[in-house]
Length: 183
Image 1 (spheres, rainbow, N blue to C red):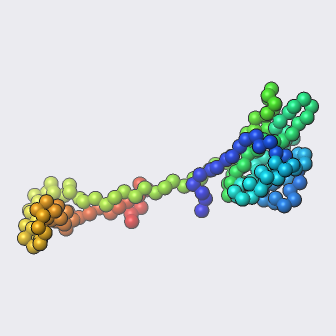
Image 2: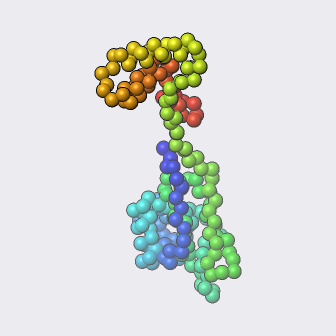
Image 3: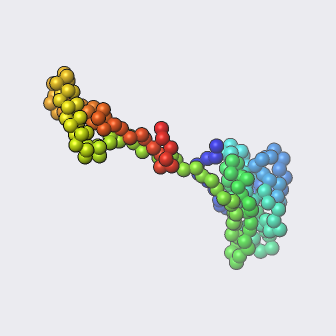
């Protein structure tokens, strides 16, 4: 069953995860640049503990560098996605710009996020009381229940008799979801 939300953690993590996968199979896709540093290792450990994958590393794109300072280029901006949704990611690419940090864009396929089924409550079919014959049956049932009730509180007695008479004479609708499924 797919999860009900699509989580993306994106940002400048100031860590180099490097091009080697070693020990982070399933988290690191193998398409990265440079060598791993301490911050990059901590980022990969966080992903392992949180069931996340580094989206940038799963696609072989010409441009991988997300940060540029002078002639030096590095990859420190990443998009992290829950492992369960990894197959929905179609591409993560770097869009070069005038700033030091390049824009990082993720292409995502069609997400099917299931909606919660709303259950409508069962209701008394009081509209049946428009019929004169049903009104007579209802009055007879009210008298019968009123006489046989041992309830002392008159308001509670009236409530219980009215509800029970309505249920027996008019009936109760089936609860349904908005999709029309009965329960």
